[in-house]
Every structure is written in structure tokens, then in C-alpha cells.
Amino acid sequence: MANLFSKLFRSGPARGQPSLPPGRRVYAIGDIHGRLDLLGPLADAIDRDDRASEDARTTVILLGDLVDRGPDSRGVLNFARKWSQLCDVRILLGNHEEMFLNSFYEHGTFRGFLRFGGVQTLASYGLDAETMIDMDFAEIKHRLTRAVPREDRIFMHGFESNVRLGDYLFVHAGIHPKVPLDQQDDHDCRWIREPFLSHKGGLDCMVVHGHTVTALPELHDHRIGIDTGAYESGLLTALRLEGTDRRLIQAEDRDSGITIRDVPANSAEDFELLVPESL
Image (cartoon, rainbow, N blue to C red; front, side):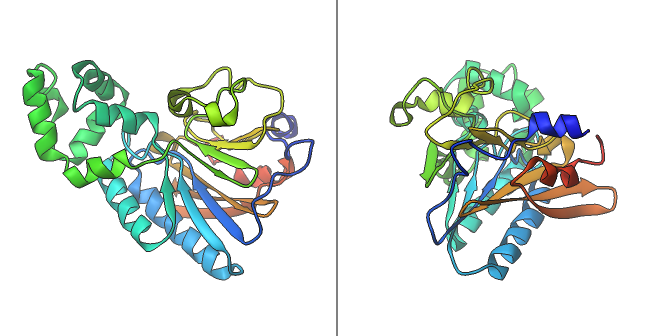
């Protein structure tokens, strides 16, 4: 197990730990995918942690893919919208929000949306996807428009491509390592895997991302991946950043209910407390 952690987790860039500007605190949350049952307790844990900490300007960043695959995409969107009215919450557009929005205009995208978790999203809006598959697209669009509130679509259209704070860049999927940061393509930010995931060199920032599911959060010299597959694993991960300090706060669905874990995330050894019970 020690060798596994030494390979999966590294403490940060050789050039020094990345940091946030003084007086800033960030909680970045990985892909939620309709798991409102995990998001609520995690948000409560974040609020408790923030209140117990020294005064700072706090930002919550949702890394995208709020919808699809899990049981309550509509509930997650409603929760995120209300949360953003209470504090500084910034939300990134994931590839699943992109597919959802484009499904209102493109028949091919609609069918792809259903294959990749859209069935559950439509169910959360009271729609039976099976009855819609063979419909004329005009009727599909009519049903989607009637069932999905306009405020939800406007809300998703307002999601951002990326957020840069201090030495950190927050994106949904990643970036192209050979493209300057100010020239990154939005499609890459939402969809990329390679060559980003296998990139071994340095970058001009530490990239915090979701999109690619791993059983445990991944810390590398240039990126931190925190999509722990909440829709299937029952494990939703948040990364807390302040100065050069890093912590992980997780909500895990166990037989006994939702459990919250909070541990440092500055070295490989810190992660030994985070192995899910299923491993």
C-alpha cells in the first residue's frame, strides 16, 4: 500500500508549494453528478470549517458535472443556485452540462446525452426518456422546454470555463499542456484527458480538476484530480486551500449514513486515512 501511495500522490511542484493570495480560502468540489444526498452534508461541513477558521475571503468552486448519472440533478442545480445566493460560489461548466444544454438544439447530442447519464437527469424533471427516444425532435424539444425550467437553463449558461486564483487554475477536465494558459480552448477545459493526464513536465500553475474518475484523489506535480466518482462510489471530495495549506473534506455514503472526513493533503502519508472502505 505504501508503494501505491508513493506513486499516486506527490506533495507538490518541485519549485515550491503552490499558494493562494493572503486572506483567500477556497473549497473546490469535484463532480457531483446528481448526488444531492452527498452535496448537502458536504456543504454543511464546509460551512462549519469556514466558520471555525480565521477570517478570510472564501470562495466555493464547483468543478462542473453537477448533472447526469446520479438520482437528483434538478435538486443539485437548485441547491447550487441557492448556495450561490448566500456566498461566493463559482461554478464551472462541465461536459455533462454542455451536453444537457445542447440537447435542446441537436438531436444527435440529445441521444448522446441519454447514453451518458441523461436518462437520470430527465427523470429528475419528471420525464421518461424511453418514451422520448423515437420521437420527432420537435416534440423532444417541446417536452424538454416544458419540463426543464428556464431558470435552470439560464443558470447553467452562466457557468464559467475556468477560474484562476493565485498559483491555482480550476477547470473541469484539464488543459492542453502545450498551449499557453490565456489561449486554452474551452472544449479542452471541459473534455480533455490526454495529453493532460499523462503530462510529466511542469506547468505555469497547479491545475485542480475533476472529469476523470479515480478511487482516490490524485496529487501530482502539476495537477490535483478530485473526481472520486460520487454517483457510483458514494464518495464526494472537496479540496480546501489556504496559503500553501491543503486539506481534503469528503462526504461518504456508508451503510450507517453519510460520514464526513477531514484530513491534511500536503503529503503522500496524509492520504492513508482516505482509502475508501471498498478498497
